[in-house]
Amino acid sequence: MKKVICSEKAPGAIGPYSQAIEANGMVFVSGQLPIDAATGVMAEGIEAQTRQSLENIKHILGAAGLDMNHIVKTTVLLADMSLFGEMNKVYATFFQGNCPARCAFAVKSLPKDALVEIECIAVR
Image (cartoon, rainbow, N blue to C red; front, side, top):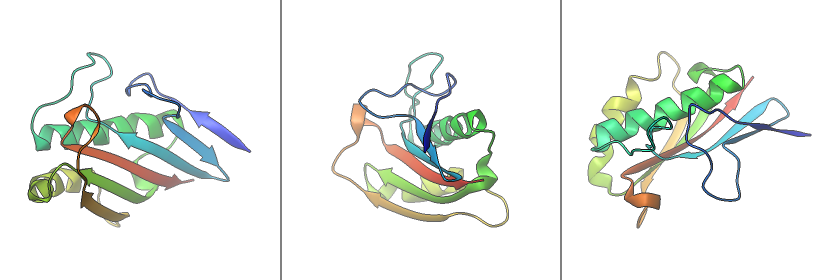
């Protein structure tokens, strides 16, 4: 059985998908663009965009009663691999101790011309 997870503090889905789905104690968070749900504005620059994408993930996990320590896997999509170092610097501030597994790669383009999009899997 699956359960839809949704937070008003994160931007709503802009297509036929959910912010997150929980199934069998696992929470699958859809890719989060760096948009502030309160203003609808996208942050500028890779550091601010990374921070906003991860804050959106934090809000969605909070709606499920979880936090960033429950994340076991992330996927980071970048507009260009030259952004990796700056993204990684901000990303590191969101995880202490045992960091989740991660892959990061560049894609041809991201929705709304974002520089970064991040998705994750968390477990209870």
